Structure formats: C-alpha cells, structure tokens
Length: 387
Image (cartoon, rainbow, N blue to C red):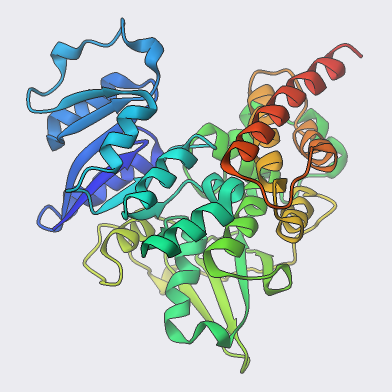
C-alpha cells in the first residue's frame, strides 16, 4: 500500500489520478488532497476518499469556504504551509504534483527534502528549477517519476537498455489544432479555436500550450533534466494520431517505442506503481481498427516555440524560469482576449532574450526572474494594446 498526496486534485490530471486510485484500492491510499480555489469539488473528493488532510492554497477564500461541510475525519489546511505539512507527513510515500504552472515548484522541493518520491505531471517544476530539483532528488535518494505521456513513454522505453547506450530520444507531438492551418491566418485565431485540441481533453492553459507547441518546448527542457540529456540527444516528430507516445533510439540503431491509446490513466498508474505493472482501467490498443500512423518533421517557422525549448536546454540557468513565466502570463493575456495568438510566443522570445540571466541561480533568484518576467509580460501587453 502506498500513501498518496495529490496536489491539484480537481484538475484534469488530478481527477484522472483519483480514477486510478479507485481502481487500485488495495495498493493506493489517498491521504492528502489540495486545490487552489475549487474547494467544493475538493470537499466532494474528500467525502469519497476520506484523506487525513485537504489544503486550499488560496488563503483569500477563508471566509467563503464552508469548513463544516468537510468530511469529519479530514483536517482543513491553508496555503503553502498546508501543502508543506501534507507532503512532509511521515506516512506519505508518493506526492503527485498535478497542479498547473510554476506554483508546483515549492511543494515538489518540500516533498523531495522530506525524502518522498514525486510523480510529476507539473512539467514547469523541472523547466523552472531543473538543477535544484534533480540535485535534491539525488541527494535524498528520491525518485522523480514522470506522468506526462511522452516522458512516461521514454522512461518505459529506457527499461530496454542502459542509459549510456541511449543515442537520442524522440518526443512525439500531435501538432495541435493548427498543424495544417495557413500561417498567415494565425493572428486571427480565436480562443475557442485554440482550445479545440484534436486528440486530448486537457485544461485551458495546457490546451493553449499545445496549440502554440510551447508544451513540447517545455517537454524538451523537462527531458533534459529527467534523463540527463543534451540538446543534441533530443528530437521532436509530429505524430497526429497520438498513439506512439515517444521513442528511444539506442547506439546500435534499435528504436523502442511505447504505444497505447491516448489515455492519461496509463502513465499516471505507471508512475504510482513503478516499477510494477498492474491491470489498468485505461483503454486498450486495437491494432486492427487504427489504420495508418503518420510521422512528419516539425515546422519550426510555423511553431517557433520549439526553438525556444532547445535554446533553454543549451542556456540552462534562469532561462527556463524566464520562458515559463513569460508563457504563463502571455497565455493568461490571450485567454482574456488582450493579445493575439501569435503574441504568446513573441512575448516569450522577447523576454527570454532580455531577462537578467544567471547561470547558477538559487531558488530566490528563480523566484525573482519569474516575478520579473510576469511583470514584463503585462507591460508588453499594454504596449501592444496602446498601438
């Protein structure tokens, strides 16, 4: 039995993680749940799973939350201190970092400091704090287990050889909703069009990242830290069917691929039961009905965000924090209707090139760059709006 703390339990990954826990009640016990502001769904989850703790990370909701409606055996906690108390509890075995954005970094660091394994769906944690996170995990003997379907695929494929036998990894990407759309029409892309992903059902921010392919840029950076790779060892290929989730090429030319229907419950479960494989509620592959699989090279002119991912891998330091914060702020501005679709990557490119770079940052340095980039993105948006 593994005791699980789930950070970001009301989001897409969080709810699917709970679905996995329902299927394995004799192996996975939920002892902590958190959400930022969706306290009613959080309390409904607590009524089902009876965790020891729930944490509402938005302290401004203290007067709104009906604490009396919470399951009687569950303690209500607040803010970052509540998250820290949950993830460091002696009974906890695995912390699932399923929240969106850089907000997941501190909770992950606290968990690793306490010697907990971390199942990581929050790619921004490694994008922003890759060297800090991986060094802390190594020092405390913790496992970083990826939940992203692509990185889970790489982890699974790497079970077939030694790390020093890996020539390169190949991250697959669906190409999003605009793979074939004329580039000259990109500035007229609407919010609804950008949210309409052809394959995956995801949250709003992640859907926009998929449309710009910034999600793949972040995954390139994440792969560097998860698997200790250089930029020259990471490739991206467009695969619209999202059946081949990623591949590993070994030095002898063999390529191992992980193949399954697009269902996040499979990588979630693998991260929680690793290295064991157990029966899963995820959809099963039916080769007879799949038809053909297509692969094509990514168009870096159509999706310039990919270039930024490789640039951050080469630069390291504070570059990941700058890119991630700029993207989060720009996506928020786009979803508010304040900037055009193409402005998202324009903002990211501009702030990455001009941020106060530091090659060996501390956590405080990363936080400062994050704050700087968010503020500059707002200023960038205002300057565009005034033209």
